[in-house]
Picture 1 (cartoon, rainbow, N blue to C red):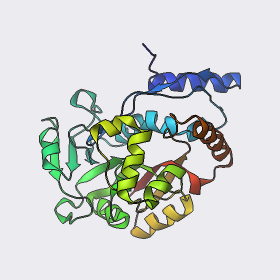
Picture 2 (picture 1 turned 60 degrees about the vertical axis):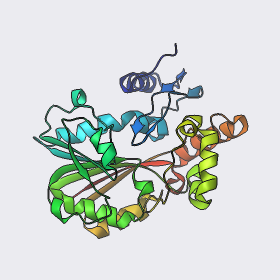
Picture 3 (picture 1 turned 90 degrees about the vertical axis):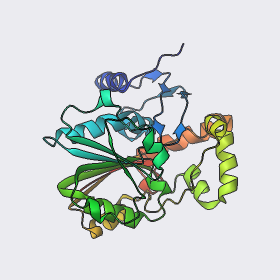
Picture 4 (picture 1 turned 180 degrees about the vertical axis):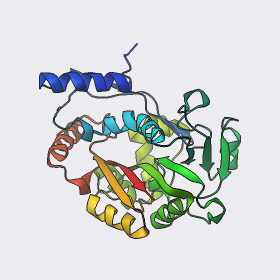
Length: 285
């Protein structure tokens, strides 16, 4: 039975490595989160030596750290009303995992059948985040999403709607894949039917479920300066973007696996944001 390193364990390894000023070689198994309509299996990551000069830019840190980052944002409000875009039947936090200070936790999805399967403790809202949202203006302190932004047909409308839904001083936090990382760039360019078949080959767990949503990557760009300019022009008072490098899509292809690892380390060291794979986007109203 493989060891599954928790986020706390990964932080402990990083803390030790920083003080020893060396890399730590470890076999990592990552439980990738359940996203709406899809469950990604436990994936054995390759043996890696964490370069402790850039641990925060590795994509695995982004996957592990997302729930804790949302919790940290919640602590900055007394009793926040939070809203998860695309949470479906399986939100980020199940009822026994809710941050202690929540006033309410609303889940959104475009599919009412998914929301009907959500925990009863959650409020629900069924609508497309790009549609009209006037009925929810100034309703939430925190709005967040994970792997939704790339499927949204109009990124500008999504971020504009979120701005109107936030209360003054509210925070929005998004975890998105970005262009022009190679697998996402290809996914964006090729016809959807072909991209679907490629995904099922490189990620067999998705093939079993036959699930793939159209990928638009509207406003999912790697360039920090371009994204910051776009979001500030909408009216957000502050914009912060954390970039992460690397991906797991080539794990089962030996030649490409080595290429990805080399490219990941190079991009992390040079911080070429236009070629980042994932981003945390944090904005405030």
